[in-house]
Image (cartoon, rainbow over all chains, first blue to last red; front, side, top):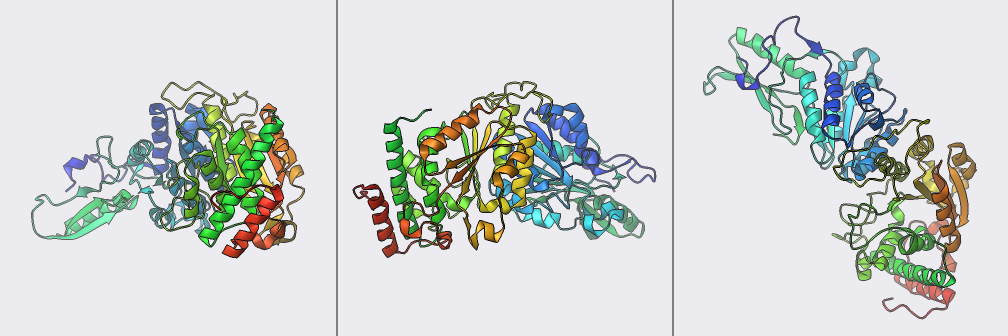
Length: 252
Length: 309
């Protein structure tokens, strides 16, 4: 059964459930963060539409910085802006950000411990047809090794929105990973989200009941697939627990 | 800001003390860079003892100017200048590169208060300085408090942007690091945004680790390149403090562009036997050499021995 405390949407398993890419959550979340805090700025490397940074650009043109196709400069300019009191979100595809600008992030953001929020879009294989050059598989590993870096992989567009708002309020650097493809939105505004907290989404009716055979810890868009798997296993009498590990670092 | 003759003499004397401290530091550390720090002693003296609005006793003063050192490996000259300016004691300089020291071989902001950034990997300082300059201008010169932000139009060529208050942003960078692509991305960005509150200083000493820059990877014509990127460019003798200060003042009067000051310097300046020798880029003097170098520095300037040599 679904964990009632997680307050997931009532039609989680409906075939025609609401689907949106997690990058939509970035766009909405960063506008929300911008309304809350005038120091929030967004830097984008010639991908305003597909990263959804354009939502912020429309709302706060004076706080949107077009960087051109220059991800190394984007990271280092953001480091400078953060040192001067801004809260920069830097947006591009994950293969370039942090793929292209890893060392700039390491030296000028992580070692400098400034509050730059690195937003990697089109991560993983969700960018499918673009091919191997654009399928960023190494970003989580690269970012979680950096000192002081928080790493968040939202499971759907709603959690993505909350993660962006939370990241803006967090001291220090954060890496946020987003996907390109539309995926089910199964959490709700009422679903709790705290950076650093994993959450049980699916469990046995009786928590203490022995017989749970399987525990699935998932992150990002695979959390929904894990829920489907748990439901399917239940039909076969196999009891499973599903945990949404949206914060990869610090690990709960 | 015009310098009197007395002030120039005082600054020259200060630069000599800083050179002596650099030699002492490197001998004590047993590793590190010699040529660059000696070559930049006059410019760092000018910054810490005349140009910068700063307060060594009030490190979080919002209205201070910002000095970003991009080529972090010449940090001995920055450490020595900061110590002589009162950020920490001069004897602490001798902890350079020692285990647990605040004075690491490349500067770390989190360890040593008063540094504006962490650097070492080349080509990244100009972008950071541009980011600070851009942020200052967004604030329209306001302090970073929670007062409502004024609406300023930033990043659009047609809009007038304030100059970001009195705070100036300086970036010291090397000539060798002009080979990094990140530098030219920063140059494009600063030129596009007309960051007139940003002044970059290039240490044009013509050497890098593997030899002369024009042999390793030709950089010239540097001035024309930056002008093409929409910068105002000046060239000075980097050992003439008067000339350098005049260039800094001229940069303040340029409202439409960032300014690059190409400072022609002599690597190893002050120690004649190593001047111009690229082999001294990345090695320290031995104890014996150190004694000789100190003597050369003093002989050059006809000064009495420094008390803590």
